[in-house]
Amino acid sequence: MPSKRDRARLLALSAKESGYWLHALPSANLGTMLDQTTLSVVIGLRLGASIIQPHRCHCGDSVDTYGHHGLSCSRSAGRFSRHSTINDIIRRSLATAHVPAVLEPIGLARSDGKRPDETLGPWGPEARALFKELSKRVIESTGDPRAGSYLGQRISLAIQRGNAASILGTVPRCGGFEDVLDII
Ligand SMILES: [Zn+2]
Image (cartoon, rainbow, N blue to C red; front, side, top):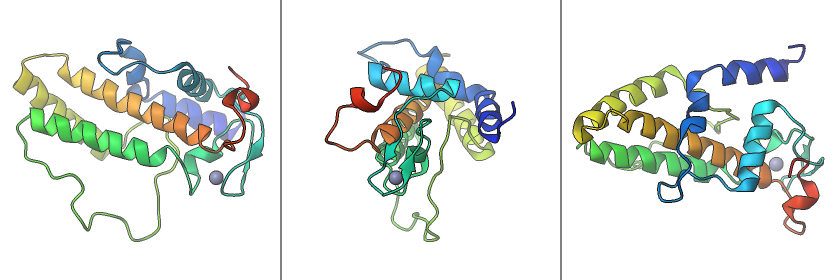
């Protein structure tokens, strides 16, 4: 891969957890469905395709045809929903495993101004360790050997939905997505 962008994409996608969402059974009842626009955007991200017409983000920065700016924009629309959704998934799993949990106690927020950057889905060592332990416990608690896989799929789907929302959130509200998305 000649470009750093494509190398980074392929390295991220080579992590097994980046593809967990692709193994989820599409079910409205289970909340594992992705709408057409979200699916188009996340597949485009995965392929490294041109997914959006160049435009100016709400924050004033330019958004190129790959749309990656939305993943690290200071006014990212999807980052907060992704964060809270994954928090909720983990809290529910802890409850299933009979582990007491408090959602984001005061004092945990970073004070250095750093914020999560873009992700295509790979996890760091701490996240992998937490997932492994939590999976083991929900499997023990539910007796379902697939419970860990389902947890990974829910987290992975939340990341994909958040990424799509972040990219779509850079689009000016006056137009429809059809006007700016290349892949729909
Ligand atoms: Zn922006």
